Image 1 (cartoon, helix red, strand yellow):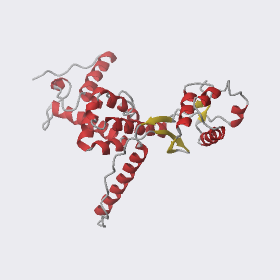
Image 2: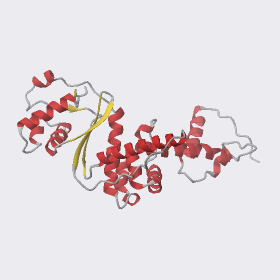
Image 3: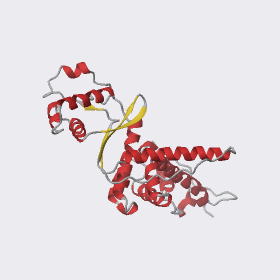
Image 4: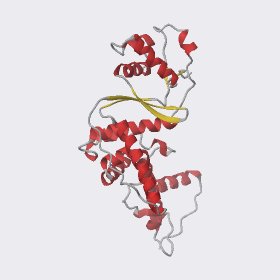
Length: 286
């Protein structure tokens, strides 16, 4: 029988114990920590390892649920079993390193590119879906800086004027029209929830909710942003996308407009009026 552990005599010992406990909780799901008996006391019903496993599984299932909540389009595209394998592999390589679950999917598009076997044969589509869904997270609660007013812009020549884009605005060049697909999946999931609630209440379930068909390849340019506290996305013309990319890269306005290619001045004026209305331009940080 193991002797009773000695009381901790310093904050350094407490810190070391916390690291051991954290390591035991975040180890890959399904792996056992046989050293648990050294720092967890068994009871009449559970061994030390079984008690630790309760918290270990709670931690992992919370992470998996969070990725699933933030990735409905990707889950629908891959199917439940394949998506589950992808998530476990992803969290194994890129475990949570943040105090908030908000950042959990930030490296998911990168992981899909690095390890395509988890999403084959739809890796390119899966990565576009993951990029769009992460952009939605960024838009939903990303930083929003003070808006740039027309008066502030008017006083500087275009050759010297440098604009800044809101940090919560994402610009995406995608090979698939995943915006329509993800929105259709969310609508489908809402209808499923309503049908399930109707059945539980004893009502009629109605028509069966159809599966959302994955999109065919087709180049699209998207802006994903927040306006008045709500999530929005907008398809962009290629020229408009190139202008915004150049602005984000720090080019002066005149050079950014030139990066748009052969576009009519009236079209550029219309784009800027729309972008200003949506609050995309902000003051540069001090």
